[in-house]
Amino acid sequence: MNTSDAEFVEAYLRAGEIAYRVKKSVVSLVKPSTRLLDLAERVEELIRSFGGEPAFPTNISVNEIAAHDTPYVGDSRVITEDSLVKIDLGVHVNGFIADTAITVTLSDKAVKLVEATEEALRKALTSLSPGTPINAVGRAVEAVAKKYGFNVIKNLTGHSLGRYLIHAGEVIPNHFTRLALGKLSNGRAYAIEPFLTPGKGYVEEVRTSTYIYALNTGFKNKQVTEEESLLIKTIYEKFRTLPLCERWLTREFSDLSRLRALLQSLVRKSVLTAYPVLREVSGNLVAQFEETILVSGGRIIITTNPELNK
Ligand code: MN
Ligand code: MN
Image (cartoon, rainbow, N blue to C red):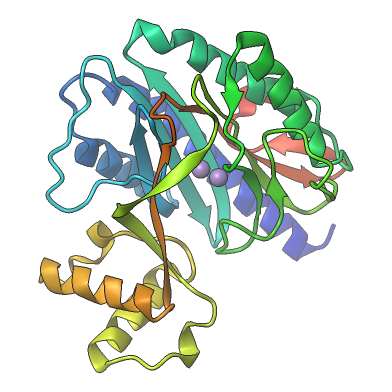
């Protein structure tokens, strides 16, 4: 292994270790009357205090919301007594990412769903080794979902990770499909993330709720105003092509309604991609667990949960 390989493995391991510590420390904050905004900011503050950077805005998705919800500036939403809360957090060290999620339920009604989802992820992880076909994940997840009588959300998948890239090209379906080609390759990192529901098993975009954006790689070739150009420059310097939210730009752009207008305009010009909130189509509860794995030195390392490594 040459030096750059060792550095890259070390960065992945450090990002994973930070993500693990943060996830452990915020579970106790999931209780009635905690503000989603305070929870997200606490996660991001802890990531920085442990020496990492947030790789994307902390997703806090409640009940039938599956993903892509992050608190906005002035958000007054709170966790209620029967909430099912998913915290999906990302850490990067020099662009190398740890992506991990947990679900905490405050309602007895969702206990089985949470157990099934966690078991699905564990079963999938234990079935993996270097060179395993990617569709082994879906096979394992689907078997556990069936056993409990839940559905897998078919249009949410795991993914390969790249430097400063959350989605590096490969998708890892949570249901078995022959269309999922490819194998787990040495030197690559992947996020494995089953979503289970008693509902139909699909998510749809809530177009009116968009809180997360990311710069497109082709952003340099677009016609933009001077003000938009300044926002692009700020985003690129701070986040590169990683996702971001308005909370992270208020220091540079203190006029919130102006900032919101600029973000929307850059989405229309295809400079930014918008990631609307995703909701289960039948309005049913959704649980999610996620770990990041690194294929290195002939083995699979679960970077975000050392307890699961043999
Ligand atoms: Mn995630
Ligand atoms: Mn992910």
